[in-house]
Length: 464
Image (cartoon, rainbow, N blue to C red; front, side):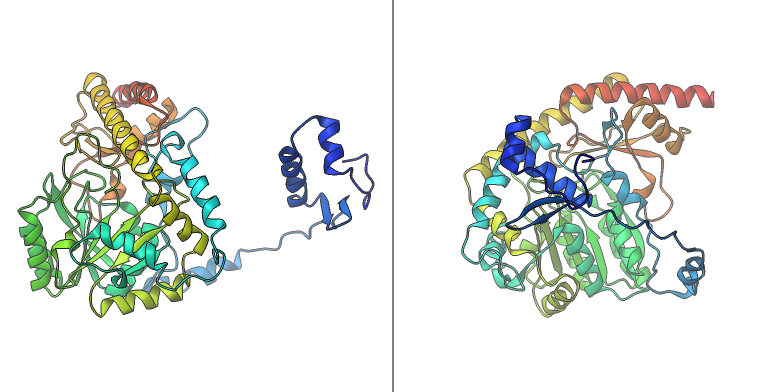
């Protein structure tokens, strides 16, 4: 850039292509990067020019006053202004180079339908009106598609399109529980949901789960003891345990909630990440609920890409209007091009092919991780191997320090999720959550387990 004086004109894009023998796309991206950095300016019809020097930035002022403002009256806040996102960031933070990602919450890029999504987005962008304002509730065809997947007589009129499952859960909790109220949650459960509840000023109350899902007697006792009016659950391949709510318990959960005058928020987050050997899946809990007890949340994100944030909220009765109002006030609507792309994707032949491919890949990765754990880390208890989702939940031996193991694993080059953030109260034991979806393949899984073995040995050596 130093060869051009401020205000001087750069060669044309064609001249740059010829000079450096690169593609026009490369030149366009380079000029865009320079413009973003403020080094060049583009003048339509005239060309690209070196930008004038910018004035030196003013020295930063003092911000210590914010400590007083941000902490004032914090003890009396019903809805806290400070939010603990640590449990969520564990699965969202990009790993350091060379670190194997056993803590990821999304499919590895090699498992994502990138070509199908790109083609769907391109087709969607050419649809008439694709860049206009969508219906507030979402595109009717997309709502109908989600309604068919839920079943049980749910109609498109009872579905709202939302921006990802996290957004939908936030809307549902805000609609159903006032600040300060208790909300029943599975124990252990998804830390992102606990963070949502606490950020809304709610009090999560744990209800234990086993391999057959939440335990009905304890659920009934928790409703009676707390007076709660909301229970949040993941009946299918629960995060983190992989449990599936049994056929015997499904009607019990609905009956208990109905008798308590309470809602059940059903987070059906990985129905499309079933494994090849799973067999027929139970229907969504909402499909067995004619009385409007269940508010259903489902999403396309887990089966596609973390950036493909299209999900649905489904509910019957007056609560739907409250959900709609909160959704509109908080988000207005989901961008229409993304909704159009979702329609294009799920309506294409590539969609069922992708789901079949992922089902086979996840089964292979699950089996590889389970076998490697049994071989290299037999002291870590693996009580349940799920037939869907992307997680294994491991109990550590008594006396092994969970935090020390997580730190040692990071030093050994493998990122794992500690169990503590998955509990709303004191945990029953020390755990790890391992993901087999965010890694490149089974070879990386084997190497990651060997690194975890080294970390366990380090912790045992330090404690011995």
